[in-house]
Amino acid sequence: MDLKTNRGQLVEMAVVGYVSQPTVRGYIPEAGGRARILPGMSGMIYNARVGDPAFGWAADHLEPGASIAHPNLDADYAMHYLTCMGNRAVIMSGLARGSEGIVTGEHARLLVDFPPDVAELINVGDAVQIRTIGQGLQLTDYPHIMLKKCSPQLIESLPIEAVDERTIRVRVTMELPIQIMGSGAELNPDFVDQDLMSGDRALMADLGIDQMKLGDLVVINNADHRYGRGYKPGAVTIGLCIHGDSIMTGHGPGILTLMTCAEPCIEWVIDPTANIANYLQIRG
Image (cartoon, rainbow, N blue to C red; front, side, top):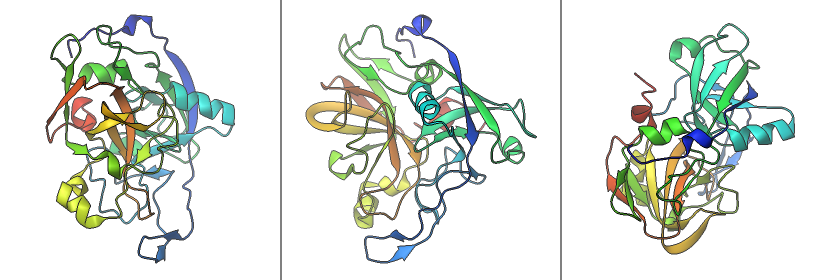
């Protein structure tokens, strides 16, 4: 990316969390009336990483990689609000001490990708320190376009183009109609993601959404995520798929807000390779 940012003004500081024990919701009701018990949230996931499918797992809200949290609520809030996608994480205890990973998502916990050989050594309870930087990041010449949860490393890796003095162009894998955006509409986009509603499987297939991958960049047209999440004609939001599908009504893959504008000042082109696994070279 050749666009200017205020990177030199940002503060870089450490936060710490711990690899969490998996959590289980118990029986999860499906739209058809059945209920199932499924894994997916929290813990250390060995066989799902960014770049893998968001759909098709025997899981609910699958969180790829290591999910980390802090038992102190204030410390946990600080970790959530300060951590940005693309931040560097270092394991500070256990067999994998000194190994590095990269933050790829924020759900109920922070999600960190580690190489497979490192993941094999990680224990539940291991401390993970994140070098947070990104809160306050701006595109200097486009102050009307808000960046959220973006580290300088992430934003600088994206092939963003300047169209004119008001407009930029980004690459996304697909467009999500705002009508299918569900749980999380009421939540702060600086803190957590929003699920798309994937209960209509035929619609997901017709729109090609069932081909979404973890780590994909997507666009939601007419969505204003500056100070909440709402419908506004002409607004545009770019998001990141951070967790997998769900059988719960009103839930599905999670979309984390990365950039948003109240005006039609973000154009997009469809690129099937628009995934942070490629931009951040996570999988080699």
